[in-house]
Length: 275
Image (cartoon, rainbow, N blue to C red; front, side):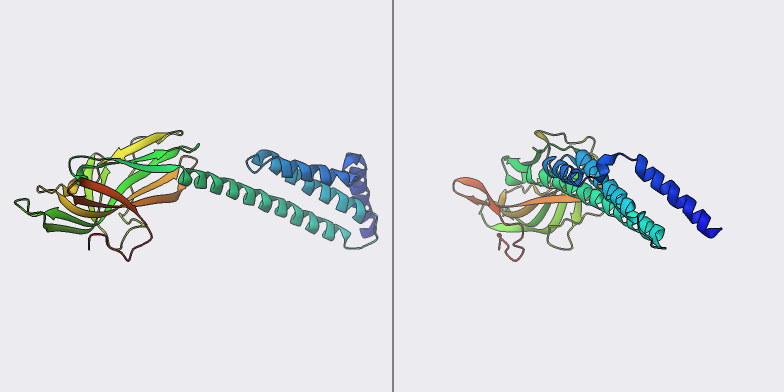
């Protein structure tokens, strides 16, 4: 009786194989599907996923067409196990492609975020701007921050000597208020606790946000020197749970010709440009 039951299953499976499109039995099908995947481009995730799925189905169909002709007693176990492995492999490949696509989007935004500034009478009045020149929108979960490693204010009477010093402080605007957070470590990365949520997103193609985040240290007698890092924390609109941060460091000094902003390495945490 057991043999008759297995026989019915085998006949049903063989009948399904016979009714399936014969194109799956031809080896060039895999070549065509492979070409589809290769030439669809990394961004064409939809086409690539369909190509991978069809290749998986083709392999499974070809495997069953071969197994049903064999006399193995475990051929159904082998067939279903192999089919499961093939489909799981296809899903893994799709996930890998999707992860790569999302990583490409994050990389595109990171590379096309640009920092700039508009100077004021004093360097502490400077307005810093971050511009999104990428093709992906930044969500409302973003924040512009200013870390002051060292800022030295002039002495009363305009002697030019620094008498007021600020060290290791982060300032940022949140909900319309300028807030202060002592920095435990030299930024980056910035540590300000839970980040705030902005009033709007930053759109594609040149949309920007600007903040005078150093104005907290407006020295009455002017600024002698400052070593600051500007940080921008953000997430993408389509990836709101993946935090990103981009930073830029400036050293500002004063001479007889006025103030000068000088770009320095963010990673050089061993050098303090204000002594």
